Length: 633
Image (cartoon, rainbow, N blue to C red):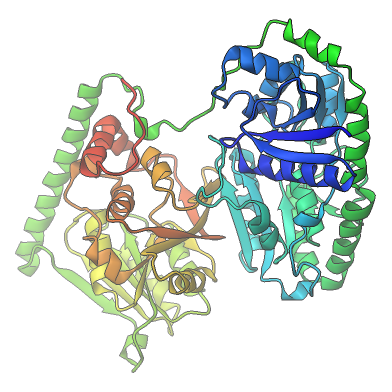
């Protein structure tokens, strides 16, 4: 009997190993002998050799070009990528040299056939190992109302930002990854295999959003409207999760309204809300979807038929492939470059410009301090106003919210109202005004006074000291066990404080936590959306300052650096790096519970004048961190 060898790359995406596992399992169920093999080059030995994700397998190998050519000529390739992407283009180039070709998506099959490649469809279906224990239990008991899992790009980020107000009242889990390198088992935030299925079995609704549709194939075709993310859907439906997806041109055997739900982003939020309020309808859709992927979409039957087809391919066809000139096979993987150095002309001029600007700032701050001495006899004089609620006898709050304020009279009231709407937590609000030159103090006071039961303190400094010093003052004055840092132009959703505090309580080894932030204002998207990863942190500061800290841990780290021109504007990045350097860590709370206002310009522009110099200073300060290799400028 024909034996099927299913090949994957250990250095490739772990998701591809999941797919290879399903194919192996289904083939065995069909009555064939099948084995999953890792990092072993196929050869013409009488077995059928199936390579899952050839764009990874043949480009991440250490084999020689001749070995790759021989392996490719003996292989049946299983494509998994969307047309128009770099990964699909690599796989398509390899397909012309292979023994046979299949793809898990009909859209990709059509794209391959348009290039003259005789590709066939391999429709996926559920297998037993995909169905987590407990997935058949009451769906009302599931802890996660809504989940998203997928690579984060600009389109998906903007879509999730639009959906954030609908997600915030519910228990969600937003699992974003950055697809700039293969995602391996154990990588921060990555869930694979049984762990992934268990998460799905605890989820009621899965959101399926298409990736950035700006990519087109070599013929200029945009396939995004017809590409359905089958892997994600099959896994979810096998665990009785209701899928809400963006529309596509072809749903295959799926019937919208029966097996899943479809809506454009503009309507998806209301549909999500309606479905969470109608558990009986959700249960019916979940059961119909489960029956479809476990019965009608029979992967074992599919693999049995394909094994018969592939067994009929003559050995001479494999031999003819060996005589063809091999394709050049080396990947060009996109990588982040912020932490490695970027091209910046006129560096000396930029450094002088930054030094000049900061010199003027220091001069103005010195004038402030002199004036404060003349008026109040103290260079650091502060006027403190407290709410009537503080006079009441009460225990120390669980959370202290520190809002730093400087010349934000137009937006600070929105920020304070969002904080005052917080629920399920005992908290205080400390507003630290860093000697604003506009009406910020009065606006803040008026906004706070509209919440008479709120425990708040307003500190108006008589001299400007800078953002780091303002935050440190708030931390020093905080009475709470946990300290939430918020800038005066950002927002929080009502569940944010309670959820983050609960995450710190549940993760005693973590010094800090943060939620995903919804960008609003000059752009829409997400930030602070991926898990704690010192390696990625050394490449770029992907974490915003809006976060919750254990007060003791923040003080032990020395607080925010407020006396270093080199990290001006990057005080939060310096603090995150210092945490990693100390051996500590923070943890992502995977919900969108905060909002980040995006301005056209900010003080970060001043930091970027001497970007390379600042990065060098951080590398020198924390040399033991996993910095990427430097690129010569």
